[in-house]
Length: 511
Ligand code: XMP
Image (cartoon, rainbow, N blue to C red; front, side, top):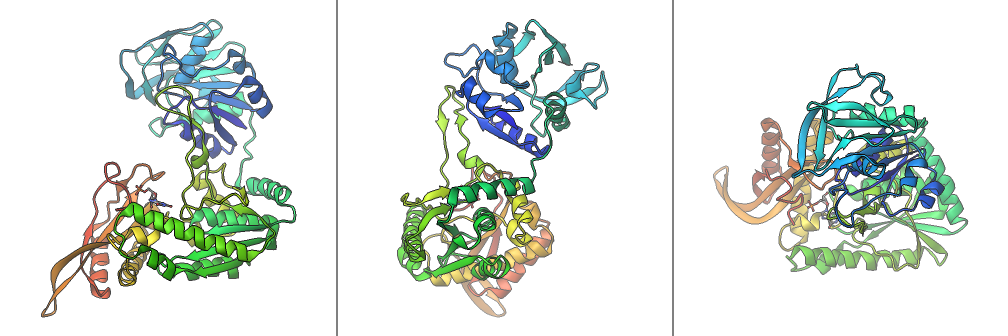
């Protein structure tokens, strides 16, 4: 397994992904880990990430040179400058940051570039301020960039390598090969990190952690909590009870779909609590988005706690679908190794009052890995491949105050929208697609009648993590079909518009 030390690059998570795509397990840790800690962790290899700092800056994250003797090491960008700096090479401070595509010329016989032709120019992505002018003693240069600058170095006898460019980004088209060469040639890793192996290992851990106690899980119907529940069920069977709160803010037939999958298909003890009226009451007259979120969150906690109590006194554990990006400790981009931990806010903002210990079986996984684990556990594709859906549900997609009537209108329109996206074969190309009911009425004409009804906005975005997003470029005829159907079939909507804003500066949701 590979230890990635995070020096604050925006690409660090991509390094972890590339390594795991090569079926080698990896974790990201901050540079504050001691050499003893690292030895204990026992990595097969270490990757030092890039970062925004200069090795000459004050209070910048560094490394104990002894780290380089623990396991084979690859430095990337700042990681390379750090290795060079620590071992007596010459790092030149850049006046400004250079970034963009560059070409690198590969030297003969370098195992890091096995599969490349010597002398070949390969496209790479650079993003650095400083650069290494002279390799440290004992190192040789194994790749140059166009201007004879040093692009990669390797120690003559120790397994220490470094690259100035970023092999982890898509703009370095053959970067995955370079990473694989490090993993399999230098580190001699075994590619055995698979969903099946993960499940086996997790099942054993969960059994050991839980013993005979009872466990509850709040199901949201989304991918993360569903996979977490299925995994825990695989480990402890009937000791698990799932609670699904119908908050009345769900999509069409969502509750039935969850019931079918979990009860009928997986045989899980599922308790469905219909609390729609309670949520509607809490939302009555509220139009501020953050107030809506708070009311929905608080109501959820009340309802969930009551349901949890009714399961029994012997409930010791709560399952949560926390994912890796939520828990990564990372260096703040501004410098000093400060630690940021994002808290999980799915399942409607559940903050258990710690009567229960947490089971978070997915906290080491990325979303795409969670999907693969779900498939391996036998969850249906329609569940595993679902678009993300926010905890507050349709409550933040009915703009302004929420009523039962508005929810019903939105639900119908949203269902038609998704149905048409699926039948056009576009569902998997889109990160998230949904309809938003606007509090605006417009004039229309139906037959000979004048209508004065609501406007519906359609949103569809592509994204890899929800942090940034582009609006999806629908074929016009698909948009036309969706609009026609919604206006014809949904009473209360006489106009449909498409949202062409990217994030940033817009957000994915409207509220
Ligand atoms: P934004 O609108 O911030 O959304 O661009 C990014 C992603 O987060 C989801 N989202 C939420 N999820 N509770 C959630 O569980 C929320 O309050 C919430 N707000 C936004 C959104 O659907 C998108 O996937």
